[in-house]
Image (cartoon, rainbow, N blue to C red; front, side, top):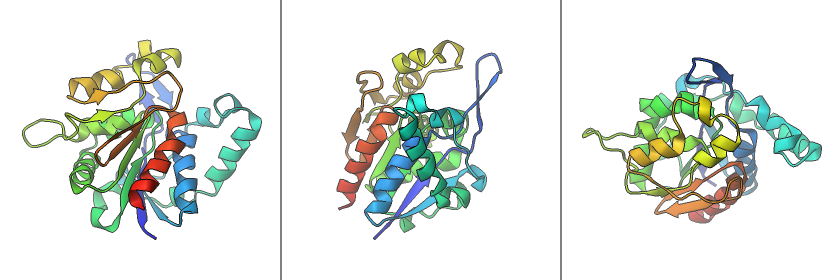
Length: 231
């Protein structure tokens, strides 16, 4: 089968408006659910991070209360333990997009810290979008789209419809009033149309080759759509 590139945050914190470093990383379900789906379909996974650093999981994403109970948390932890590719990432800066059939960005608050301002990731996103290959981005990972600027200063995703973590969800999660900026606001300012669904309910938006999901619950259905596009 083909190779799918997972671009994962390398950040272990998110800097809040008061300078506090909120511990974070990537969100487990958003990496694990698509990983299991892609592997089950026979695809090879390669992980890329800024500078090739080994990514860290947001410990909060392993808690029973965000995984439907202890059994769900155990399943996620077990799957994460078997996600060997996370422990040997390549550098985003060295990625040759021609080697991959699809690109996927899992979220967590980490992308708000690093991928939102990572030029190499921004170039990769722009190339992936223009190439027509399936591009999946979920939850907070659309923050990476903010770095996808063209030479004239416009955003490569301007005019696209996306799903992304909403202001309502950030508020309900308890961090909106402490954030330097909110994802939905910044995407809107960049000319991206955010199609917000109900909080915490799966919401996948497809616009051309771009497939986006609103929240952790959207990661599994997003993977289904990406696999359909690869078929």
